[in-house]
Image: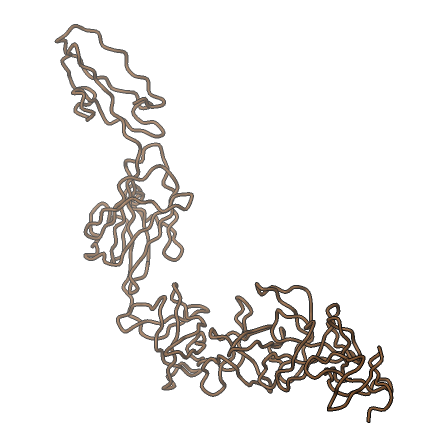
Length: 478
């Protein structure tokens, strides 16, 4: 394979059987930016079998090939608990850890990508054998009962005979790993210290953590944890507490057997009570003042009826539950009860159309059909969010009375009206009249059932009557 920066030696043209000495290469050809010279291949199998200075007998078909390998770094982490001295590297007095269970080194390149280079683990050591030239970040992960004390660059200490400290932040080491020949690698001595196992609550800056009896930190899990007083002493009470992936106690809703509570962060806080707003989505919840359990369904709170979904969030606007449409104020969440509400009309997909109607809600908060009157004009408000004011005939299911609402505006008609090809009469209440009715000083008769006005000669209640074209009876009604 062609290697940039390397010029192949000229072919040897001596006679068959001639013995030649393999040449030494200058340094610039032995080590380049990306490759290192390993030796010669004289057998044609792609493997190194000879070095510079070796003698080779020529064959007429023999081709001597230069073998190069990409430059790779070697990194060795040695874990120990005793203090590192400057001459330890030379004398080998470091006592390595016997067991590396729970110890891990995560290597990331300059772009932040994790290097998928499976390390070799030996007694007290973790070795990375092939790392391309780059600048790396090394994250040392320790068991919960160990802490990082010191990291020493053993190579530099061996040369200078004094400790060369490698800085780290938390458990992270940033170490430039560069050079034109990385085969020498680097060795780091990592001093760790076993700490006393923690149990129970532990404050870590502004956060609270929790440790089980075996000393392991609780992460991404719930724990039945004791509640402490302001002095850090157990109160004898317990709450379920949640700890995130970092082990920090955070506020979280806990659910068991269909009931939910808001577990608050920290060892001194019990389950939350009262109104609570989720700051992530501004949803509102209410937790009972007595038990702290989360309410759902229809609830009477602060002097108002309100409805809460199964998730616990307060419902706003139009809601369908218990087989009926209901409406809750979109700011307060108060449910409309025994009152009229100027409400938005929704389309079949539940989206607002931009239109509004007056809607009536009964004592249970259910939207029902009801006649709405304003300034002497009436409309039939229909139940539900998608229906506008009724138009056409309507029969009150409560008493069978018939009404008619104009097809244009939806307003309720009164007095004599020409509908469906016939004259009819509607009282001031809007109900359609039948039988004898006195209209504008004249007696008129409207057929029972249809309410249509009669004219001409009619036989009514056993007598004959004559009616003119306006429907007025001629002569006396009696």
